[in-house]
Length: 174
Image (cartoon, rainbow, N blue to C red; front, side, top):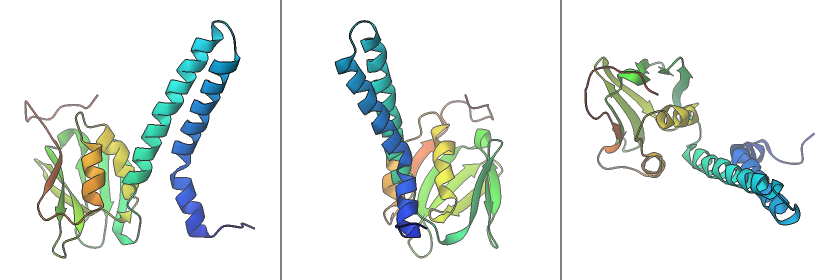
């Protein structure tokens, strides 16, 4: 039996990575202040790692748009898969040429993944769309802060999140 509602538990779970990072950083700082000798510097390193984990967790939690949108997003073996009754499809991460957030016909934000094979359009509130954070993080130079802001607003024009530079041919991501 839980004393919290289901939606409150889901919101808390969304921020767990940020909270864990903050706890690790606090522990590292506590050890840095209380432990003498060379171990202090290891504690300072632990505090730094906790801070990085906390910042990443904050970005990931802010990226989460919610659910209730049409379709289901999955990431598998370097491919973004969108399962929907109408307009589903897939896009390989290493074949992408551009990632944007654009308005749909109702003015709501949707992801648009463009590759030589075609365009994949996904609502920002599709079930599982939070998985796109890791896919975008794998793209060199992707602007995650722009993605967070654009997905939470009603864009009037396409907002570029990432575009391939240099040789337009397929290449593997790092």
